Amino acid sequence: MRYPIDALALTVIAGLLALSVLPLLITLSWWLLAPYWLILLFLKNAALAAQHNHAHLSVFRSPFLNFCYDTVLTQLTGYSTPEWELQHARGHHRHYLNPRRDLTSPVDAAGQMLPIWPYTWQGTRGSFGEARAIARADRQRGKARSSYRLWGHLSLQLTITLLWILWNPLMGGLFFGLSNLICRAMLWWGTYWQHVNAPCTSLYDASNTVTHPWLNRLIFNNGYHTAHHEQPGLHWSLLPARTAAIRSQIPDRCYRNDVNFHLLPPPEKAG
Image (cartoon, rainbow, N blue to C red; front, side, top):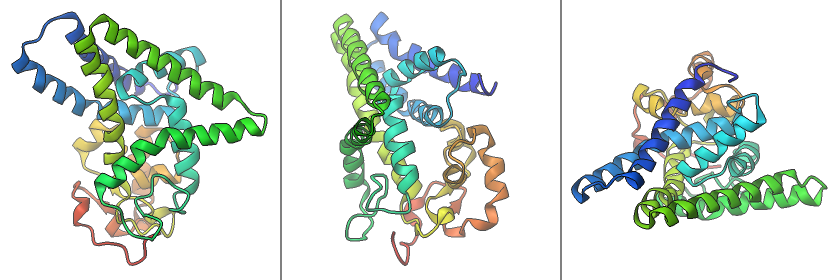
């Protein structure tokens, strides 16, 4: 591993995978199954955050180990790491100051802030399409690797998911089919709060920073979003210190310790 603290993330991911497979191995009563599924779905926010971090800075130095980790993460989130790398790292991080080119921006073509549910639908529906478009542009420039990785990982993901469902149709469909579809939407629901009502006139007011300790424990410091925008390749464990270093440059309206971003006033000028 590049950073020993990633052993924590690996332990969490291994635990989430074990909890996801458990209902395929043993029979859970219906009164236990529903809360088990809902709690596990909530905890998968940690997998989404870990995969986000891994897409920016791979956990292992070994390509083979990274591939194995990619495969496990994909089964927990419904996203492949190549999709993250294309849509998020190369799409969002290059264009977050230009809402018209950034799928992640909650600002619509008219310059208005989208409500959360249309935004979540827009992102969930458009994420893979944007990744595919970036990969296709690479291929037209003679760089086909990103396209091969995107489609290869997708094929593997669908094959493994199908095997789960063939093994146990009900539980496989519930814990690796439906769960992953919902996870894709959960990602965008969370992303909304990272960017809603941010004035987006500069690097330091283009996202919201949340320092709430329990939230950041769950999502591996992804609440420190402005520092992440400034240095996307900075390891997640270093984001709190970097945030402290740039605190004076982050507007107060984009910095808080709670998660009630719906209380923020709208920006004077969106985008």
